[in-house]
Image (cartoon, rainbow, N blue to C red):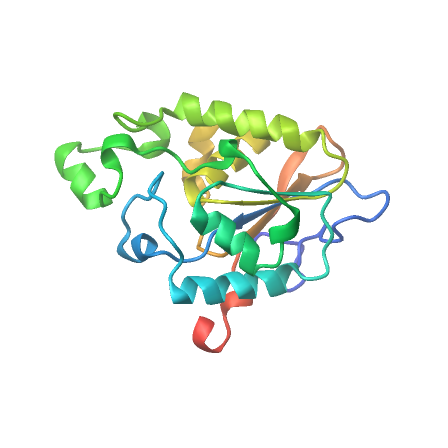
Length: 219
């Protein structure tokens, strides 16, 4: 689902930088990996993109073409860094460890069905992961990067993974880590966080836009 101003998936503030425009944070999820296909929890496991994932990353680059960013950041994991590279931002990217995906601990590589079989009712955004990160820990990382991003003059582009970006959006909106449970993200999607009227009113201006992928073999 896309949230926008009704103009073909283009975010309302998608100027990335009119002189007097409020700043925007663009969130780009990495492209497909083998475990996004199977549905396994992929936290710190450093998987490469699939061939299809690389094609989607290039399409994401086309979606972002022409936009200018004051800073570009990426998770250190190769699936995010490679997506960033193929999208055309390798030379200007800063790697930030705070953008790492949720550390799933004992649930790394596990399917949701496998986890629920031994822990009925488990919810990541509420319960966290044994041997990995709690919601409080990943929320602290998200808030730390959020403070950094808000001090940047101009638009920011971030390449990371699904659950971290969902937590980050929840913190941006002021609804906390738990709010991320409601914000689904597809691979190679782009979303934008902005403001309604002023800097005291953070909002989502675009969410989970994948229109750039719906062509030919990328469909």
